[in-house]
Structures are given as C-alpha cells and as structure tokens.
Figure 1: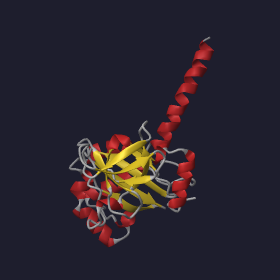
Figure 2: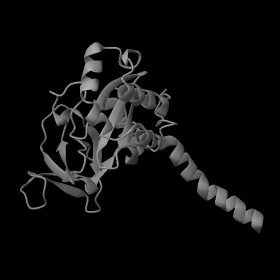
Figure 3: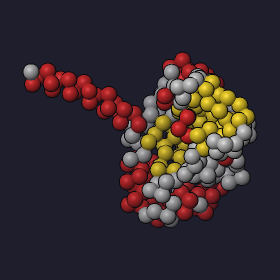
Figure 4: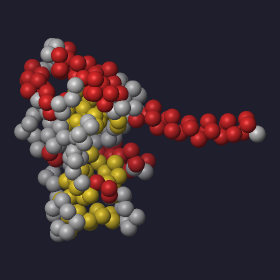
Length: 230
C-alpha cells in the first residue's frame, strides 16, 4: 500500500517538476532548439552595470552600452544587487514562438517588470516597464508585442477604445483568433493589435489574455511560421 502511495505521489509531482524546469531561469523555455541562456548571463549583466565594469564583452556595441548605463535606475528599479540576484533566481523565462528567442521576465517587488530578450547568445532588446526598449527610447510601446488568444468562456472578448470597461467597443476578438499585446507594468488593461507592427487598436483586460504557453499546439505551430520560426 505504501509503495502505491509513493508511486502515486511521484507521478503527481513529476508534471510540477517539469513545469518548474521549463520556466526557470536555469533551464530556459525550450523550443525547437535549446536556447543557450541561463541566469548567469543576466547576473553578469547586472553585476557589471551596478559596479561600473566594462560591459563590452556582454553588449558589444558602444551605443547600447551607453544607453544601458544611462538607464541604470530603470533597469534596476532602484534595488540593490542582493535583491536583483534573488529576482533573477526566481525569474520566468519563455519563448513566444521564435525559434532562438528567449524572453526572461524580471518581476521587481514594486510591481514593475523588465523583460530581457535574447537571441543566439546576445541581447536583442531590453523592454522596460512602460513597454519601450532600453536600447532605443524612441521606439513606441507597441514594438514589444506578444502573441495571444482570448481567455474567456463566452468565446469572445471586446476590445475597448480606452483602458476601462465603460469605453466604446471597437471590435471583438473571437476564440482562437491570434492577436498581439504589450504587457505594461501595473496596468490592468493592455494595448492590443491585430497584426505585428501596427498601432494599438484598443485595450483588453489582462485577465482575458492567454499567452503563447497556453496555446493549442496547432496555433503554436502557426505562430512559429508567422514569426519565422521552425
């Protein structure tokens, strides 16, 4: 009897272990290729940034290094390295269907999130809590767009003109219809887009958004094709 209970417990725990492995910063979300990133790269980034160590081995380009140094407070959110290291250790990593891209979300105690987007061993973008790129502050928030489908039993969700439930309905998104959104820290409503590289059409409450990890397999495959993945 005890052996049966022990075996059952292992079977119940196994999916949880697999989930934590896939979504931890030590074992970055796996796609068709293993993404060669660990929390070590992010730790080294912040160590060099805070201590004023040369960041050229990490970021390569001088303009990016200058941009990052000038935005230290936004990247650290004012927290010291001990807190930041703990945040990195607990970070969530994911892919949005791009075969070598990995996004690592650093969620700070103040409710803000900084997203480090890496590809093939180097930083592509660092998305700040307001949705702009730390490397290029002239970029608009919609440049950071994640694919999504609705999360609603009714089979549709209303896109609102403004970020509140009383504003005008500009469109409905139906079940399994792919759209894009920009996550903004501390916001309850996220700007949404029907296609990449388009201005925001309106807003959807964040509770009604299901991200790529929750897609049915056939939609994951479709997103990969749309985004140039395998």
